[in-house]
Image (cartoon, rainbow, N blue to C red; front, side):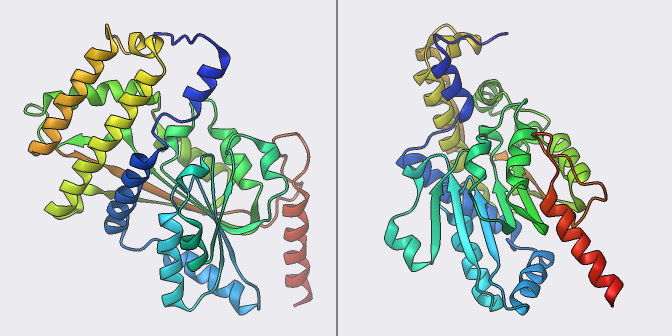
Length: 330
């Protein structure tokens, strides 16, 4: 079913992000970050720590960028991990919505920088510094089916040759409910949320991008099913809050979205939301599977990689030839 909007600006806004960006959304993102931290245990794998330690050993300060950072919880957690490892790094967070950034006193206390950035706007990436590590988490809500390559290449443009790219994404297509025969209201709203998000097949998309454009690609799998009961109840609260954001945003965009979902009115959609939230309170859990892709940007491609605008990636070529000469001289 096609989705029609009254004007181009409305369609553009709806396509960019389908979740909330207000104070309630920030609270949900903080909770989501805590759940993910508990699920993954270690935010920076040993491979990344070794890479950063090698950079520090050369007398340089490594640079890390978190794109789609929201309130910056991943960066604050990473700062804590790096302190334990004795590594000092520059930490920069980027997001399209500065309203979600933490208070200035918090960012200063942790020595973390925050700046506005649209992952889909190539021109905004051109003046940025290059990074040794780039991290993205749960950004599929902001990337449409036709936007993956562009968003990926924009991030690649600010990753140093030999740098590490990490992308963590929840797999909506593989989510499971603890008792689908009992929690029918959540199941019904989840199917609508799938239509609202208009996202699918995240796993094959990212696996293909990482394996074809990067080297040493690894994919780790996590799930909230591994959490203790308290963690699973936190996940239920997280999904209840996210569902409300999705429904509120859909209603905000008007009748076109409601009709696209096959419903008669916004009131009907809001009624379904209330029933789903009741299910969450009474014990329903939507288990969240998450994959983490990690890979390295090649030092060299013999003929020079062609970038999105048809030019050669000279930085990659030059850095690669530098490595070749070093090996030859040794």
